[in-house]
Image 1 (cartoon, rainbow, N blue to C red):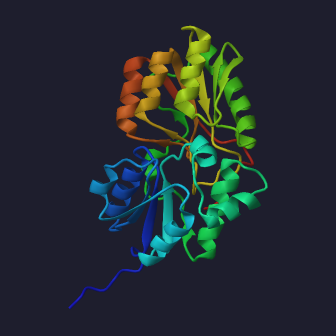
Image 2 (cartoon, rainbow, N blue to C red; image 1 turned 90 degrees about the vertical axis):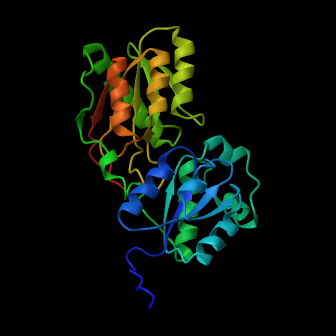
Image 3 (cartoon, rainbow, N blue to C red; image 1 turned 180 degrees about the horizontal axis):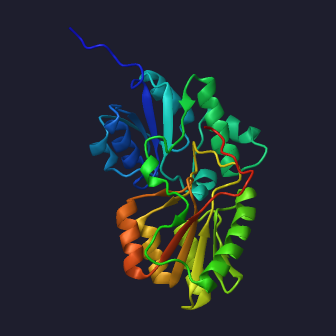
Length: 286
């Protein structure tokens, strides 16, 4: 006799981009007895995802109609978006199907929030709820405070305060979420290239001088997508760039491989501090 299906763990899907984030979501869901069907973005997701998922389909970035059809085919009612899709690919490299082309044409602004927010509404219209991408990863969201053995020194703290103020402004415009600072001067602002590339660009401009990195969530950050992420690679880039301190938002920034990441920061003398989001920046999508 077949076992009864637990409706609380049935019908979950994962839309997978690049990096380790999708693998961590799969592991976190599996610990709760949930097996997710994976829709992997061909241009972004790691081939290794095939070994981690029990059910998987590959789609290209512009195949919105096919992605929805596959989610329906697999009985998915709740989905998580996890893993980065490079912003420049979203707007320059895709060949949209008719449904995505229609959606792109209707956007009031061609930025990431507008596009992914519109995709989320399409999914909801199709009876698929897009869920908080950190739902299964609570321990990777840091609480407020200094996370490393070393706290930022006075000069770093001043740069952090300045950097967070500037970063909140660019995040509010959906330009980027990271700025790199040196002596109360903004050396680099993240745009479509991503955090690590922005740090590397700042290093070239600073010529080996000490840098501080501030990464924030967006005002009214929607935790269903585009959540700030810091991984071991970012720490390696910071070490190469002579960046000595990192500021992030508590409760809204995922620290992938958290223990390994913090150990690497400690070994490299990098200070990491998580700050409470500013008053009035309530979360959406939760």
